[in-house]
Structures are given as C-alpha cells and as structure tokens.
Length: 626
Image (spheres, rainbow, N blue to C red):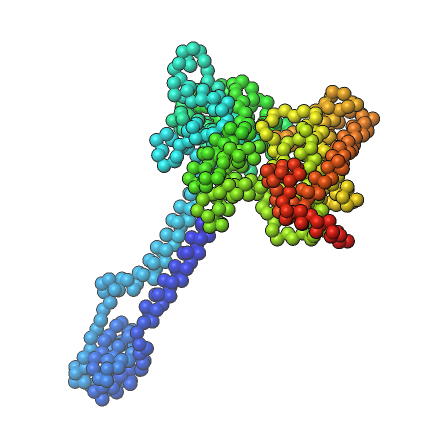
C-alpha cells in the first residue's frame, strides 16, 4: 500500500505539470486586440489592412503598422458577404489580401486529439503501475512462507572461508566436529562399516565462546554448501509460517546435499513444549514440531547435517536431544590459560604490538574471559593507543583495557572528597591485606581507588592457574576477603558506609550456596535444599521450589548468618594483627591510587618509598573531617 500511494502521488504531480504546460502552450503569444466587422470594413477602406487570414469563424488581420487584430464572424455567412453588407465594394475586396487557412495534417490532429489522448495514456500508465505493485505484494505474500536462509557455496570466493586452524582453543569440540568433516569428505569409508553420521550436532557453551565460528569452520573444511539461519527467523505473527519456512529450508538443503544447516540460537524455537512461555499462540510449537519431523521423520534425510548452537540447553525440548535428531552434544568451554594465549595471538594479527606486550601475562590476567571478550580486549587496547596518538599498542594499554572490560571505564569526572578517598583507600586495602594473609585465597594482582563503573575502588585477585573445582577452605577465605573492606572500615573509623553493600551481598550468596547447594553445612549434613528451575541463562534461575520445612528454613538462615559472621571475625582478626601493614598499603594507595602486584607485595614485606612515608606522616596528623 505504501508503494501504491507513492505511485498515486507521482501520477498526480505529473498531471498537474502537464496541465500547466498545456495551458501555457495554449495561451502563449501576445494578446491580440479584438474588433467588430464594421471596424474591419472601415480599416480596409482606409487602406490600413495588409492581410486577412481566415481560420473558420476567426479572422486574424495583419495591419500595415505590423500589429494584429482579431475579428469574429458568423459561421453561416462568408467573409465577402459580410464585408459587402458593411458597404465594401467589389474592387476594394479584390485589392484586399485574403487567405483562407484550413487546419489539416499533424498540427490539426494533435490539437484535437492531445487533450483526450494524453489523459487516457496517463490513466492507463497509472493502472499499469498500480497493478505491478499489487502483483509484487501478492508475490511477496506467496513467498512469505519461504525460507530466507543465507547460503554459502564452496565456489563462492567473495566470502572468506574459516578453517579449524583459525579457531584457537576448543580442542575437544574441534575433534568432535572433525568427524563430521571427514564424513562429508569421505562418506564411503563410514558407510562400508555400517556407520551412520549423526544427523544433528548441538553446540553448547557460554556466549562468545565461538560456537558460530566453529560451525563456519566445519563448512569451510568440508567444502560443502552451508545454510545459515537464526532460530528467531522462523517465528512470525501468523501460526504455520515458521513450519512452512522449516520445510522450505530442508527442501533447499536436500537439493544441495551433502550440505550443512546451521541453526543459531536454537532456543528461540526449541523451547520445551507445554511450558506456556511461548506466548499467546503456538507458533513456536508448530515450528519445533516441523523441525523434529524434518530431522527424523518418515522421509529419509541423508546428507543433510544440522548444526545448532545455544547457550541455554536447559530450556530445550527433550525430543530435540534424543538420538536420531541431535545425536551429539558438544560443549564449548571457556578457554583455559593456553587457549587464551592462542586466541590473543590470532586477534593480535594486524595490530602493531610494542615489545613490552606479553600475551602470556595478558592471558593469565583474564581468567573466565571468552574468545569474544579477548577480541574486545585487544580492540579496546588498540582504540586507547590510537586515542593517545601512539604508533604501537603498549602493555599499559592492554592492562587498562582489561580493567575497562571487567569493571568499566575509569570515571575521572567523579571526584571524591578527602574523607571519601581515605575511606575508599582503607576499604580496598582491607580487601588486599586479608587476601594476602589468607592461605587459600587467590593472590592480589591490582588494588585501585580510581572509580570505574559503579565501583568507587576495586581489588583484583586472580588465580595462579585455572580452577574447575573449589574447596571448602577456599570458600571460607573468599568470604573473609569479601568482608575485608567492611572490617577495615569498622576497625579504623568505628562505623561503616554503603560502599560495602555489594561485598555483603556476595558474601551472603556464597554462604547460601555452601549450605543449600554444595552440601558443606556444618549442622545440616551433606544435602541440598531447594529445586531450582534454570530457565534464563547458564547458571541463572528464575524460580526456586522449596523441598524443606519451615523448621529447616530457620536452621538454614541461622547457618548462613553463622558463616557470614565467622568470615567477618576472621577478616577483623587478620586486620587487627596486621594494622601496621594496613596503614602502609593505605598510605601508598592515597599517593599512587593504583598498586600493581609487584608494588603491593613489596609493601607487604615492609618496604615503602620515602615519599610515601612523608605522606603517611601527614595523613596521621590530619583529622578526618566530619
């Protein structure tokens, strides 16, 4: 309708322009004076008339003075008769140059037909264009149920192919997927042994771990057509459209077999049926049913391998995960230390790095980072270097980008008062000192009182190696570290601030997990409490169903409180015994604002710089303002 309206407006404007042009053409020329036949006869007698041109009932008279006049006569009477009646003699008529013009030829027909033909042509053209538009709408309506999957063909040289050697880390996932590639390249050796290649492979992992990249690498290695479509593209307002698009997609794939179909974000259409989370209609269920039938229904589906990716496997329908559909479930984990270094090497290509940049150090500083996070890290470092007009990316830029990705950009406009700055310094020093003195806590890598994101300051502690399991002692020490800032404020100032809110919440959550999830309760024994329905992301729950009594709930609350109180006492004891160390770290922080690992460990050994000692003396003499 939008295109039809546009055509109508254009047609209307064209009609106005043509009408104006014709009007201008019809009224073109100088305005001529009109007189009667009697006056014309007098002018002929006076010899003022040079020529008379007769056009039907109109007389165009050219005078001796080069002017023109117009005279009209009756249609039933000839010109000579009319002039004789006005007293003109035969001799005077013969001496007058009279020419009779008859409108014939193309000029006549143009003047007669153009006012009728031109509007007719324009109306026909308007109807033609409107019909074309309506046909286009109908054509799009008929193709509404067709799949819009993007296809990448092996012979397409415009698109860069991804190979397995361009995907760092994910060794186990690549090993699983290499079997798919071998089957597509050499299916005969598998078929001779009676082996059947999996029809579907489900890639599961946290966001940014490289699931889509691995799927592209499979297509690039196998050299077969690759159909890419997102799960959300099947979901439409009208029921049945998604199912129609699934049928269309698999029909295209069967014609190009062997080939690969990649369904990204499978959870958009693959949610468990009957949960009521699909909205007010059952479009998702219809689409899911069609996917199930196409993957393993009555008709054979040989040569079409379905790869799918999701970071929410807990919401998928069980029928998708049974053998014959998604036979394999490949987990793409977060990269470990070696994998992170390899990923950084790949993303460092094309970026001029300074000689002081150590990718191994960056990998050690980024535990828990996904491949996308690491790519973003180096990109932020390059942006920071360019912003400072540098020719190379330096280590300082990379370290700054780590803090920016983890916590947020530095808020230099947020100016703290001297009192708030001193409280923040003691708070962060409390975290750092407790972490250093706790045998099972991770070492401190950085302490800062520069505001970033929502944090007034921060303390970063990182493990020396990647961990997959955590011990009871580590949890206790971690809670003590979390409450180190709270304990420092209470110890030094005798009161606390709102700066410890996040620490208290994290410590409480850790104590709650110890009691309810990890079976590490001292009083309630080795069991879990509560059934969690994880329906949002990996590790995130939206509901918890109680499977314990109110009496047990009271005991759970008591033990959580005991764990938090015990962690607070441990942190207070450590800071009380190491009060001098706490003061040294605080003084250094107030001077430098940022302490790296080497500087912090030097202070913990009792070594300080002379400038810092002077600052410490001044701070000791300065009373905290009210």
